[in-house]
Image (cartoon, rainbow, N blue to C red; front, side, top):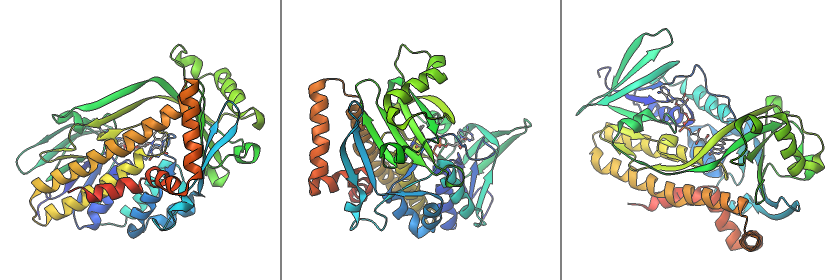
Length: 405
Ligand SMILES: Cc1cc2nc3c(=O)[nH]c(=O)nc-3n(C[C@H](O)[C@H](O)[C@H](O)COP(=O)(O)OP(=O)(O)OC[C@H]3O[C@@H](n4cnc5c(N)ncnc54)[C@H](O)[C@@H]3O)c2cc1C
């Protein structure tokens, strides 16, 4: 086997690391290139869905993730105007659908580190970091990634296939002739963390969505350092508010006062503002370039689906590349990957995350009342309740992808 007989993965975030681990376990040499010296510790995905815990189980990752995370069976929708709990959804309804009828709340970088620890035991897995991939190219039977080390040294990494797991601004996707269709929400989101115990103070579950026409809030708990607990609050900013204003202590204190007054004073540990997009690539592969995770699709964080759906991409893709490696025809396999993952990204993650955000922010009083009533009814009806948590957990997405021929 020559050194070119390997898969190059651009991006060692959650999806690149997991895909690389899966490929290495299939006996395929893999080189992962990442521009950061360690997994980013900014506050991003906080939730591992039951579908992910099921997928990770045969890979041996699930017990350690449960050990490092917080199990959560229930999540709440509230009316932020009245603090009323409108509906409480219970993953216990999934007891016959999954071995893990709960989510695990855990910071994204800890999930990546668990996958990296497993990958470090695989002789075929090679991670190179920090190294910035600046250009990718492909020929009939090869791919190439040109990359720059921190000291300016340029390296060329060659392989047979190249996975773009390099996030929403993917240079791999940009090197392909594909669209990134969708839209960017007009408002920015500010993620603020606090150590104030909102479970004890206000009866929140570990995941909560509080609807309001202007100032909705999504609240999650993650373990934080040594399980001391950290609450992550996502607040939308109004368009007329400047970045400086939204990041100020005064703005955050006003949001805490509006949304969490009964909890008393909340400290501010961290804040971060970002733009939110809903986009899906026009194709998930072109020739020997393959996309998985945020490089292929991005969505708002309401519902905790982006990374979880990306893991489904990565596992599906690695399993197909393994068949190709053994001699199967790549054309039908990659077209199948594209059909399975693109269609479900649109029908499940885009549709559900957009619906979640619209329910949270609805300003027409009649529509708002109807939306909240629908949530109440769904929670009260066992069949509808189970359907909703099947979709929220992305088990329905996974099952649908498996039925696509
Ligand atoms: C605030 C927020 C909350 C979220 N909450 C959730 C949640 O609860 N549940 C959920 O499922 N999802 C959530 N998401 C989405 C989730 O964070 C993403 O879906 C996930 O990070 C995608 O992983 P990825 O590996 O595809 O991309 P990324 O995490 O973006 O990783 C890409 C990697 O590629 C590297 N890279 C990029 N370009 C290059 C280059 N040119 N050369 C070398 N390396 C490169 C980067 O350094 C990075 O390590 C949230 C996102 C945000 C922003």
